[in-house]
Image 1: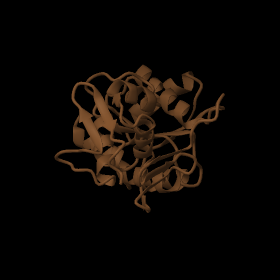
Image 2 (image 1 turned 180 degrees about the horizontal axis):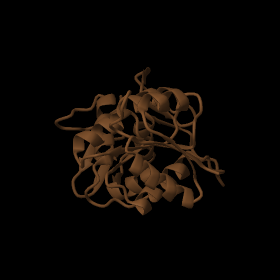
Image 3 (image 1 turned 180 degrees about the vertical axis):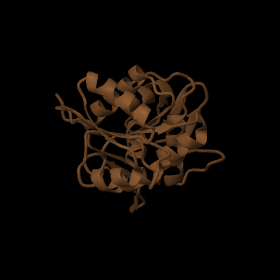
Image 4 (image 1 turned 120 degrees about the vertical axis):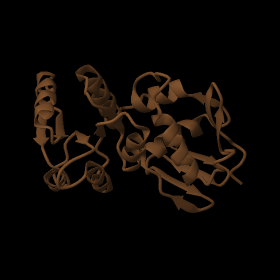
Length: 232
């Protein structure tokens, strides 16, 4: 049975989410404060974590940041307000996805299934290319290592996933719809900023020009393009 850790200080909401997911045959462990959750989950890793952003004893964002240093476990952040700053902070700390309250059961389950699919290794029918080299940019999928001019770049799991997809189609436009489907498992709704935020962080790591990006280009109305000839 898939194990889910739910870290939420609102006991009524935590009970509702736990009951809903238990009815869907998930094994749910509930924590009501950040410190207890961190101390337990840092040594006992579940299949997925649902983490509230505001918690007593240790802030949810800090819990996320510290857990990410130890594990690649999928993390969904819950935010109380539908504000971009909450999304940015959660994703910067290493969260894989976020949901704003009030939580809708079916949407939460969809996000859980999407992240679990991404986290589960698949047996490939064919051997996929595992290293991409573009001039002085080298991307190795098995080790998730990226070097630029011989220097290692420290990318988050989310940033690496975006770069890998774009690099596989270097010189071609990749739509937001395609990125959303491959990265998150569902269609782009026209309002979700998650992909844009990941691209923005990736540009910083690749030393792209923030005002006029030329390495990871925005093709307005179409998507993003990783340039193939600028990595000398």
